[in-house]
Length: 41
Image (cartoon, helix red, strand yellow):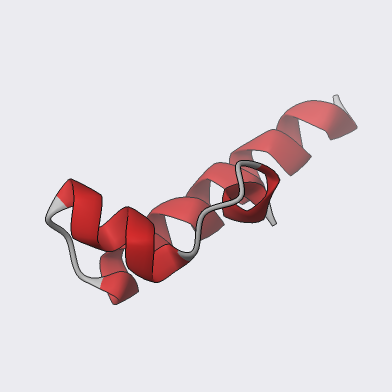
């Protein structure tokens, strides 16, 4: 998982960014999908 590579929890990221944990989760999932799609090409 992307966020664990930096050693942060979703809760910590959400708190620092002023976002909900749900929103952070969706952002991370979208980022991971884009990275996977890029790696397939």
